[in-house]
Length: 200
Image (cartoon, rainbow, N blue to C red):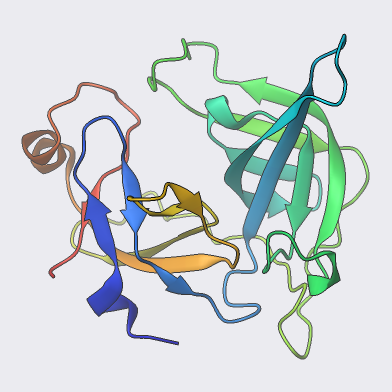
């Protein structure tokens, strides 16, 4: 794996916030990550379909924490290669979603909980890492995480030029900064937008 600290870059574009140039995760490196997908097909032309992709975090064997704009129908845990069914990922149908009541499609209060009726296989830490799952460790309420190095993970856009999504789960280091510093770098007023930076 390459040195993530030298390759990760934050896209400063106001319209396209992205983490660009993460690195391939090791199998099992992010067992708390959940890949969320949905396929949309036109009812009168069912062969015309499109799909959406989001990420979330495993809270427990029935619960995923995600963004309100990511409430979709399929939850895959243990995912490593997005389009490879042999990577030991396990997929489940979501049956309930709870969106924060003040969310209005503009990134404010962008929180949601997805419930899965069938118990997901959590935790399941495999010997080779493939298909590994676990719940994430929530932050402690009385700890100030300013300047801590965290990691982001996902299959999202990894090349600005092509807007292509990553075939393998990506990770990148990010530094946690306070809201006032975030607003100076990225002049928006959305309450739940997350912003970090890397020293590159």
